[in-house]
Length: 86
Image 1 (cartoon, rainbow, N blue to C red):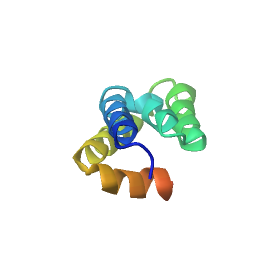
Image 2: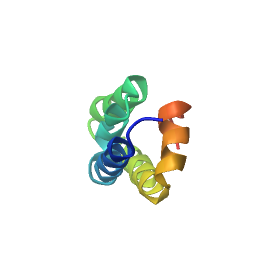
Image 3: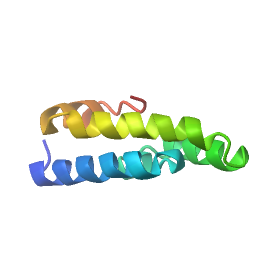
Image 4: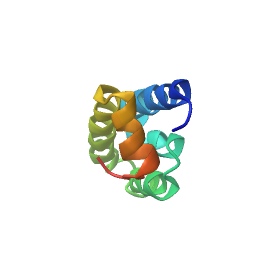
């Protein structure tokens, strides 16, 4: 397993960005999920912001999920297994 401090900082950064900037998919890019992040960003942009509400709700839910998981659960789910959605 990698450095526990690195996992914790990545978890906190992704969680906060998911809550605050969820519609842009920034939290996905932080975790290395380029495809999922690009999908969220493009949905927001290509719908002229109308899809931002849906992407924002998804980002909010994912941000809360990230922050409520323990470091070990976060690592095994989002770093090791690469679970892209929820």
